[in-house]
Amino acid sequence: MLVKVNGEKIELPEGSTIQDAIDAVGAPYLPGCVLGLVKGTEEVEKHVNKYSLKTNKGSIIIEILDGAPLNLVSTWKERYKEFSKMGVRWTTSQEVAIGPIVTELTPSKETYHYHRWDVLFSLSGFTADATHLILSTGEHEAVYGAPEENRGVFARVVGGKRTILKLTDDDEILVVKPVMERESIVKSAAITNLETQLEDGNQVYTYVQVEPNPKSPQSVEHFYALQDSGKVRVDYDSNTFVGFYALQGLEKEAEQIDQRKRGTITFRNTGKGVGRVYIYREDRVSTPSHNVLGKVKNGMQLLDIASFGDEVTIQTSPTRIMTLAMTQKEAEEFLHENGVKQIREGLQEDEAVVVRQEPHYTMDIIAQGEVKTYGIPEEDLLHVELYDDTPRSTWYFQKITGLLDAPVGSLKVHFAFPGMKLLMFKDVPKESKGLIPENTPKDVVKAGEIGVTNMSRRHIGMVGVRFEDNKEFGPTGEPFQGTNIIGKMAEGIENLEKYKEGDTIYVTRKR
Image (cartoon, rainbow, N blue to C red):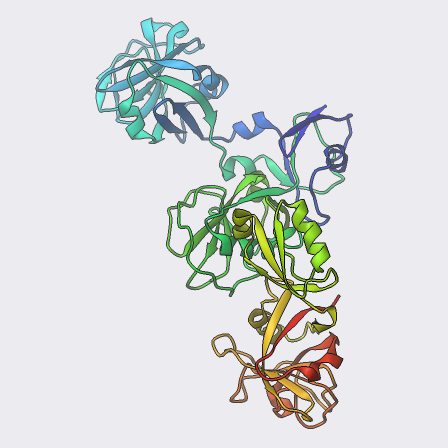
């Protein structure tokens, strides 16, 4: 049997499953993610209501009327391809005619009234052997030999009206094709599992391929971080878009603003929901609060099917250029594979760990063709383990360090006094609002534990770590009730005492 996997045709034995199809073509797919199964092209087109007529002067969109006569609609859906590569037969101040083709419609000799932008079948000479497509450009009455059912009218022009007015009998219809909208896909699709058996003509979608927009490098980097695991979770879905909110709260500058056409991916750059990412199922106009970060190149059908809570396999090409937490040697090999020149800075030995890269954003690196990688001794990179029971405070810590969207973050030392056995790092008032008490210590704060001052104290948002146990005060010098314990230094605590005020320390998550 013949099936398609992500648009690729393959022959499979009868009784094959989705897993068999994935294995046959090596389709990208991560376990647990949603899959799309579409019954077949013919089944999908049963539900299509819009069609595009591409001409040499632009495109025209027509939409099937609700309640249009079945014989007219079925004639169109069976024969629309025949209007491709066909010239404009004639034009007047009231109509544009395309054709002819042969149909089985029955003509009438009645005079009918037509409205502007009606789309109808005309049977010239009162014979179905000369069936034309008429696009009405003005109110008029005419004898078209049209079928008596609804005066031959089955559709209406909904787009490209200016294009129609430009057409002459020297112009050509290049191609006619259905406009695939979410409604037509969903009606013939099902979310399924890997063991589902396939039938001849089925289409399987396993992943979404994204093409990033070089004109929005910050927003693109945000998306790379969002899908770092190779998949994203749908946090909201509607007829208009699907939303991904895992990194909500991270701000980026306004970048390229453009129309939000179907398949467009945007980043909300301001207002409520800043940091959210949206992929559009339907066209929308541009808005200054949305940066266009890319577009879906393949797999939009899977996003049409996905719903709240589903995880979707994502591939972005080109891939992210991120060298942080690599050694200088690993970064060299990685960059070479991606056609990027490395310029080593800081500690340049092969074993040094990269903690900064310049430029930081993938799109800028690709544009320049080179990147500076700043290295430090491996022992100077501090590994932190963050706890799950302090969500607000942990989010705050990751945001101010940069760990939310990068593998290495940084903190600037605010207070370091010899003999005090603690380091404190400056608060960020803009980000520290709402740090309610979470996981406050009871009897003792252990050496290496990381604390954040909560909203019960004046210095809310201060971060600190102690080098030895303390039964009285938290890592930021506050009483226990004013301290949220968010994690601990898993590696590198023995190196903390060497830092002084103004130094920068680099942190990464526990290996």
